[in-house]
Structure formats: structure tokens, C-alpha cells
Length: 283
Image (cartoon, rainbow, N blue to C red; front, side, top):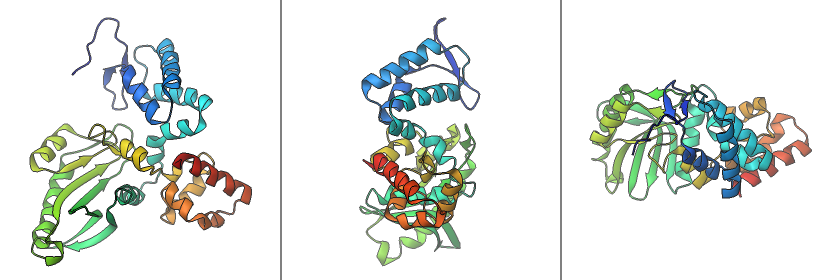
């Protein structure tokens, strides 16, 4: 159902430059997902609505809501920063592959990342292969540090052909006889309309920040408690980069490998603060 636009509708500017009506419920949902209780979310919404003017960007709305949330609950504010934290994983894209692999691992799948596999005709590198529950997902990850960017139609086009080449061979191999195969494309941003249409027609599974509705990356992050280390306010950005270089991308992994903090040359007190913040997020 499309939003009804009236002369009194407040229009806000998205990262893409497009204008859309301000939707209070969207803001409330994001605040609730961040851990704000209903009273806290309503208080912040009231503040935003008093301040809001037509033409304001979603980024400014986000910043103000984050500030208000931070005054009320530090952990909830950290969760609200997740999208930005993902964009701070680095430019290579490989940390995002590790991140997506952990999300599937926490859902009970056996996961491989950055693996070269044989197809019917040639070899292919797959970003993530998740196997379990009678299925095997062959996943291409497309990562961007640009707000408002979209995955174009070219991506599902070439991923479809590559994965089909792999599937054609694996269907003939006894060790894969009981598995249902599916092609996936995952991104931390969004998909273009034609890439979504093409994927729906050919049965390609798409997952982005907020797609499919209720089951996007932001939802899986909260349900599986898979948080990037770049989310931690107690961890210096340069130290986060050093951990990511060691393939320690998530808070869960860092919590399990606390000795990695020793390589950062930080005090025991600082290490304790980092661990305490991680445990607060994971509760």
C-alpha cells in the first residue's frame, strides 16, 4: 500500500536523492529493532516530529535519532549504528563474505567462504557456500561502502549462469544427491528493480539490508546476534581494521578469540571494556 500524500505530508530525501513521505512507523520499527522499548521509541519519534521539516535527509533524521537513543541507552544506540558499521568493514569485500558466512553458520549451516569449485565446464570461485537442512546455498556477495547504491541486473545475470554450471556437475555427484541447490545474491545495500524481477522469475534468492521484508540482513543480524566488530564504541577504528585483517570480523568471533586483543597493544583495562561491550550486545 502506497503512502497517501497530502499538502501537509513531510517529504524527506533518501540517500539515493529520491523523495518520499516521512513514515513514523518505519522509524519506530528501526528503534525497536535497536533495543528501544516502546516508551523510549515513542519519545524519540515525538522529538523527531517536532524538529522535522520537508526536505531533510534520512541521514540527518538517523543522526538525530541516534543521538537521542544514545542519551537513553548506549547498547541500543550501538545496534542502531549497524548499517554504518557494515560499511566500515573495508573495501575488499572479503570481510562481508565472512560476515554473511557467520550469519548462515548461526542458523545451523556448514559454511565455506572464498572457495574455488569445479563446474560442468570451468572452475568458479564462490563467496559463500552454506550446506544444511537438505539444501545447499551458493552465494555471491556484493559489498559497497556507498550509501544509496544498488546491485544492477548484470550481477544476477552472471551469477545465475555460473551457479548453474556448478549445479549441473554436482547433480551428478553422489555426495550431493540429497541436496536441493539454490542461487543467492547478498548485498549490504539494495537491488535494482530489474535485478529483483529477473531473480524472481528464475528463482534466485536475494537478500539485502532490508529485503525480503522481515528477513533482510538487518533482521538476521538481530535474530542471530551477528554484529560486526566495527560496531564497538570501545574499539578504535584502526584496531578494528587490524582485527579484520586477521579475519576476526564479528563480535562473536572476537569474544571466542580474546587473545587477538593482545596483538593490539592495548591495556588490560581497555580489553575488559571491549569484552564487556560485546557481552552487553550479545545478551
